[in-house]
Image (cartoon, rainbow, N blue to C red; front, top):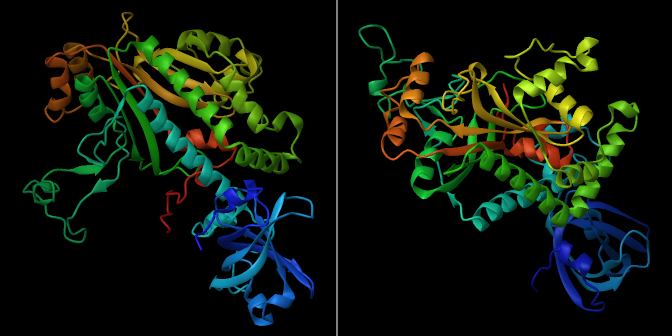
Length: 479
């Protein structure tokens, strides 16, 4: 008999029909006459109740139905007599697909800390919290591709192994096939990369942007959605060594077009979550409230669904970096020394606390900041006429700060080359990037959205390690 998923059964009202369900046991309770089994197969936040008349089954089989075991049930769909669910299944046959030793199984039916669950990330999918996060993550992945496909963008796979450093940050993971215990050296005593697999120094990519620009300057509008890597030795709730980036690049777009797309894109994603993940979002909202119930009112986060609607229902405020600095310099937190990172004027690198003040306290709306100082931004950003700023933009959300960073790209060959030389970037190795400015250059723009940063916002989780299945962080590459 063909299996039916729990999510479909929970919506079915064709009582009396026979169904087959397979899944993992969350709990079993009952008495000598009847047992109630909560079954889940990952398709829904809700469990399906299986009612087993003890007289129909061997005692030895009932004892094997433990938390964590996998079973197949054939039974009759019935209207539930108890509260909490509309339907249940009266079991006719039960088959044990996989036993689970209840004494050894780490996920007992009780509350577990997120720290503990990270240690058993191979099993945490079976919890309500991580089941919900996984379903929301899938929905957001689908929504990203749906949005860009409907707008006529082409998805481009950019290299994971690269010889360029798009950000100029230098914090990259090296890729080599050389024997680390016997590294070949040149006569000058330097590493001889000519003997390595690619014949040169290579790394894991920090961004697909530069290669994305190459495609956009022929295909007009493209996007990448792939893994990126940063070798930052940072053990915070906001950093991962491996994460996923969404990076659209658009020919013939100026900074205003770029901002319009970023606002439309983020609102689309949040609307999609609200429309398609309502049960999981409601669960995650209740989870967040439970986590924060002992906090002071001023320290509590905005309720999750309210927060998503806050972004969807408001136009994003747009202002320059200089205007933002003036607002921050005149703010009460600055004047009273409440900011952890003081604002010193033009050239200050804005921190999350400053970004959140602008969004949550000053404007009470999402914010897009533009025209940052050239000195704190990447080489490829279009230089403004003032000679001090670049046509950059950051999209700021409540509780999280920056969620998107982007810019209009510098299309002028001479200005780009001058900037690269000022930063001592290797122009010979970057010939291919400069060629796009030599052969039919056009104004173009793009941005990057860190997918896990988006997931933090959509799920209300407090640690980025909990919104990716297997987090990669300093000293941690388990599973």
